[in-house]
Each structure stands twice: as structure tokens, then as C-alpha cells.
Length: 98
Image (tube, rainbow, N blue to C red; front, side, top):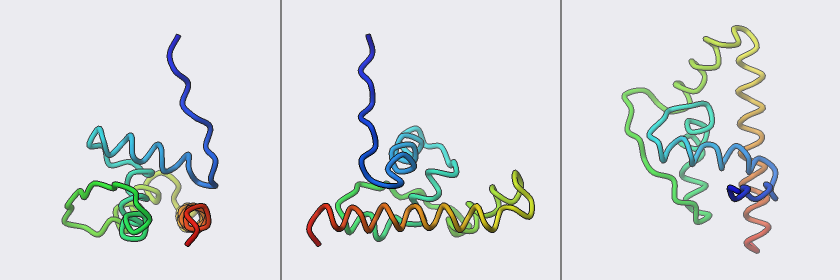
């Protein structure tokens, strides 16, 4: 029987786990791009976020992907993703006693 992944304990941890898995496979997905957008803060909290150089800023790539799929709803979805990764970073800071 395969080992079950641990349940996320922090808000937004599911996005982080998926983004790290995608980056490990060199995939640029919504989750991996979200991590790359938040990488400076996440790295300062001890997460190992690999760099993936692109000619376009990560937040532009993420928004463009969302806009292709969601049209005018991209703006609110983008903002919700940003709020979730900020919540994750804040919760990680509290967990680490910062």
C-alpha cells in the first residue's frame, strides 16, 4: 500500500506541496508559478524553492495562464491565490516563532 501524503496543516499548504512537486518535475503550473512569485518570502522562511529563470516575470505568467482559462474571472482568482500564499507564509512565520 502506498504511503499517504500528510494532511496539510497550514492554510495554503496544499498549494505549496503541489507547487513544489511541479517544480521538481520542471513544470510551470499555477501552483509552481505561485511559489515562484512568493519565493523570496518563502525562502526567507526556510523553504527550498528552486529558481526557474523566465523572460517574463512570474506573476505575469501566472496571470496570463489564469486569464486564458478563466477570462474576466482571472483577476479575482489571481487575488485569491495571492491571499492564500500570504496566509501560508504568515502561518509558517507564527509556527516558526517569528
